[in-house]
Length: 360
Image 1 (spheres, rainbow, N blue to C red):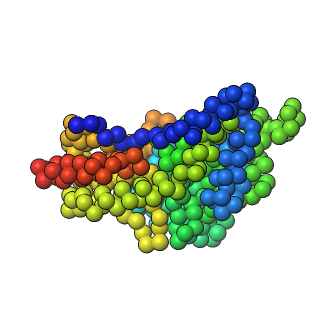
Image 2: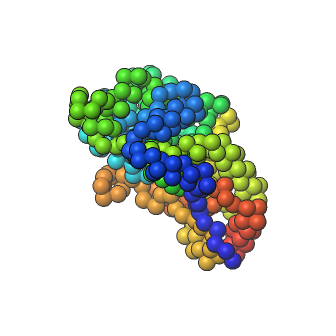
Image 3: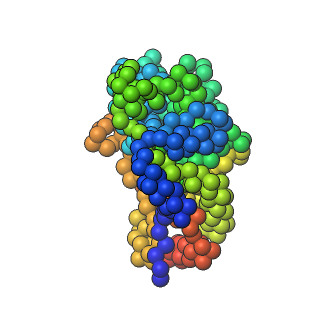
């Protein structure tokens, strides 16, 4: 049987033509294509100013810095996420305070968030895991009550929304990723979305050695620029992201309607929430790894996102007890949901998984 990959970057002829056009121009670094990508992406986040950078991690890092987060500050963040969420906090000099998750959504638990507040808490970093928005209205209420900043880690959540309000427009800043397996890609890259023009300017300075005008360095900065080569890919991907998202949602609906829901705990989507399904993730109690092995034998892509809570990684070695996070790492399994799947692929995935559930 032909393998069914877990993820598949979609690079078409138009993307290739645009890259060739940039290469032939000789202007390979940050230039007009980057500006066009920023302007185009802004339309998907309520017109907020956008700053393109070289990765989602860079986007998170300078978003935090632009809001003044640094040494002595605490930032609340879920431990059930990719390490970049916490790495970006630590790179500012602030301390990540790891918070447990809601077992239904895999996103940060509101109750645990409230219990983790201290006098040093400066911000909440809300992760929209797998493409499902975190509970942003409630998080913003908490932030307002305690005068906290809010940063959205929307690396996996392109076009996700709550009551038609897009993620990336709730907090003080947001970060998106354009890594090859994300719902849209630039090859490598990221986007910072800001609520403040002052923070936007700071991000522009930070991404380019602290200068907007060449050799007039205003602050100490980095080299986090996106190239026009990458932006050219992203511009074409922007034209397709709405259609791709619809396909992902249709594929997810097929899986939810056809998988054995008595064996697999299927994704939960709260009322009014739009999930963009970067990953379609089920929970399997007790035999997750065995199911994964059987899927491997059938050449159906699958993976565990994430096998180790971030707070237990050697980089952090935090002794905080987070029971729901720990349980999730033992039970989650992501299966293919990407736009390249055919109807035949979806039928094979569901039938194979149901056959596995019947045998266990």
